[in-house]
Image (cartoon, rainbow, N blue to C red; front, top):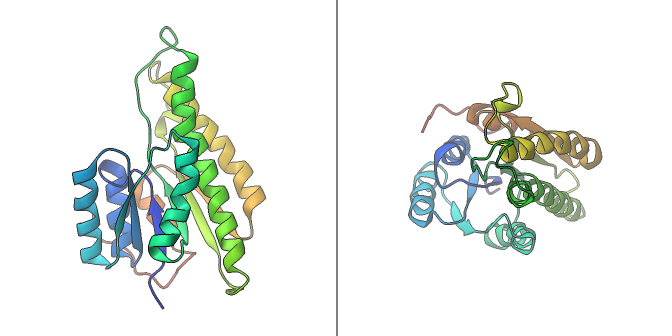
Length: 210
């Protein structure tokens, strides 16, 4: 059997890259999503493939609904299947109550909240279809939130709203997409990797930190 496949959004650099490397070390084939960071994505693919062969990079603008809806089918075409999605990609632009605008809020909501919901929906459909030939198939979605939800500051208002909305959506998705999908929210790379262990418990614990 081939290793399981995980789509990590925003995996070219920073936290997304760390999550991708942790999961590759645990035995996952990683679909490295990126938007503009081409060279960083290539480097992450190479580093993930050195741990578990088969990583590939896929480009998508998560602020565009059509692009988001096309992303998971592209991963399935490249890998043959998808077992999990880690929603890490984030629009993070500064605003405050004084500079807030509908445009800023919508931009953050599209990529930080809406994209995660659509990818969860798409994975649920994929797992449901796989069940016809693999009755035991299950999947998982991990949504990265932010400690700002517990320790509020007066800046990055639209970003904070989008993460709060994702937290609320996570609870609804958890209720509606089970038992085919586990849906969890976390705040760190290590928590994200640990959250996927029940999906494929045969994978080994990670020891690498990017």
